[in-house]
Amino acid sequence: MNNSRGNFTSKLGFVLAAAGSAVGLGNLWRFPYLAAKYGGGIFLLVYLILAVTFGFSLMITEIAIGRKTGLSAIGAYKALDKRFSFLGWLACLVPFIITPYYCVIGGWVIKYLSVFLTGNVSAAANDSFFGSYISQAVSPLLWFSLYILLNTVVVIAGVEKGIEKASKFLMPMLIILSIGISVFCITRPGAAEGLKYYLLPDFGRFSIKTVLSAMGQLFYSMSLAMGIMITYGSYMKKENHLEHSVRQIEIFDTLIAFLAGLMIIPSVFVFSGGNEEALGKGAGLMFITLPKVFESMNMGTVIGSVFFLLVLFAALTSSISLMETNVSILRDKLGWSRKTATLVVSVYVLIVGAFVSLGYGPLDFITFGKMQLLDFFDFVSNSLLMPLVAAGTCILVGYVIRTKSIEDEVELNGPFQSKKFYRFIIRYIAPICLIAILIFSVMEALGLIAV
Ligand code: PFF
Image (cartoon, rainbow, N blue to C red; front, side, top):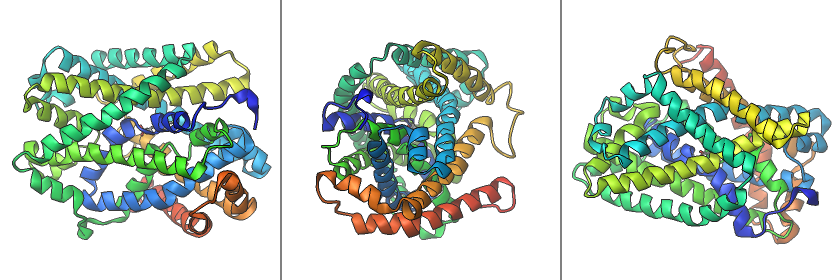
């Protein structure tokens, strides 16, 4: 282990830092809208199956690769096998694609926080509020810039320690508040239908699209196939039990996503009717539904404000880790100082993100097929690059360096309970499914199939 990289002080520290990166808008914003759109219960079921099979195996692999080599993605893949260096480069592209649009949504979150803090809940609860807000040119850009500024300041100052401390308090609060809001939502008249839609799988709604979107979501939510977990693994102490840590991160991440669905999906049925149009609202769902929930509560202004504050915090811990990754890639490769690299990344995010933000308003004529700019970035990273990196990693580990090298790393501190299962997934199931997913995604993008 390369000691100059520093280590997480405790096992909890590692789990929290990795969970802080994993838990973010992916759980709170992206998971519920995909679940609502792609059949509710069937999406949830497919997601859970993928989480305990693929998610578990890939996260073990990435963290073990990081800890074994003591390097971040580019160096780590190269150290394992020179011919696979390209995977490290591809993985590093992902954070560069995600960060700009992640910050655009972060800007939406600050906007909603400000609306709640100023007591304008009923305005936000109006159906057209979200759509008309994001189609403006200037205001979303200002909030987006503020969001970037928060990231830039933290990444330049390097106050990760403070974030680690705050996480210990704020993450549990997010869970408690989410449970409270979920209970409120599912006890509203009319929520039972929504609860059924979310929890009971309707196999008639299953399609290949369910698997494609659940898989993309899994990578996104658990920060997989983008080099992040490799980097985190390189900071992990040899004494920590890798398998247990991975289980904890997974459970935490999935629990928050599940709760977000529980807050949002039944509420769609209560406040907007459970028709396809209301469920298929896409990227705006959280921003359209939750204000209605808060408006109907006693003390909704306060609860809504606290909730959006916690969402903002969860988003920040994730985007800071995204930004930090971009910065460390530039520093490693180009030898830039932290400050220069952070400023360059911030300007890059500002420019590319501005296009994404304006893509809902003045630039809405820029589309890729049926996709808006945000959806296009999301598609390239989640449906193309991530499955490609994940499939390549499985082939590298399953057939070139062999799973034993990963298993040995996991076994440094205790038995690897799911070893056989792990080997089976990495060698057989994962590569086949991932390649199939990749082929479907490409065919869909080229308009060869409608899934
Ligand atoms: N996993 C984060 C989320 O669910 O919001 C998104 C993310 C954060 C991806 C950090 C990658 C990353 F490095």
